Image (cartoon, rainbow, N blue to C red; front, side, top):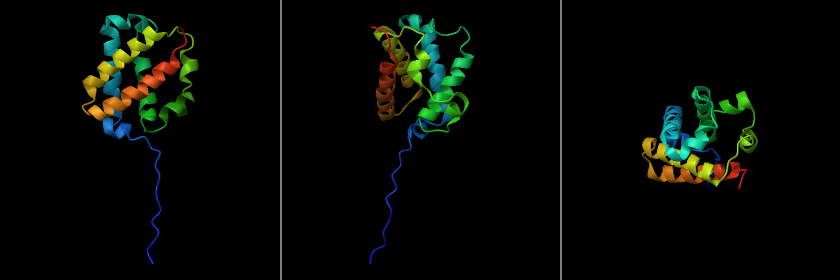
Length: 136
């Protein structure tokens, strides 16, 4: 009689570990906002942010760390992400979405050596960016 080995199904998101942990998320966020500060095509979305990006960076690090499978620090501090609602005050059209994605792609290129992970994150970020779009 063979022993029954239970199948463990994990819904855990492994992206955080693959990227390199919370420190790698912080590097990604810094590179993202550096791109936003320097890219001509990102002027409109940069203007949607406060001049001091420190608090915004800290929030995004917490959100992305949780989103990629880390501790639920963002949700514990700020509640459900409700990204569409949180971004509703801003006019986010296709150009803004594309500028955001260009900044994120540049940041991923600078900070993520794993090509497969970059592709997975790009696809996931595009879904979010498209979901937040609220203007034609």
